[in-house]
Image (cartoon, rainbow, N blue to C red):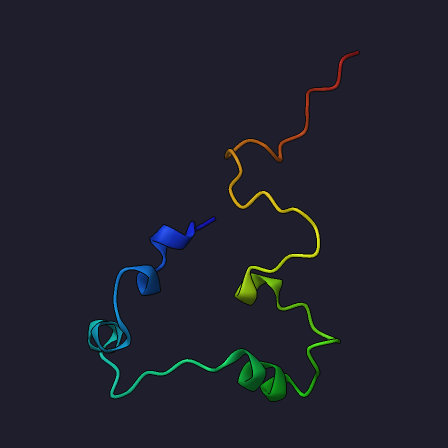
Length: 74
């Protein structure tokens, strides 16, 4: 899973990213624009991944083996 620092937008501005990916233009949707594009409302959609405003505490980084099951003892 990528960390925020691994994402290209954490290191480059919009024009640099546009050039890097070879696009003619590049822009971002606002949160309201993204919600509108889904046909939903902010109350219906979870936007925590975009805003960082989680309803419960979230551990953003996990050790690579943290989701593996413990061995079953016979």
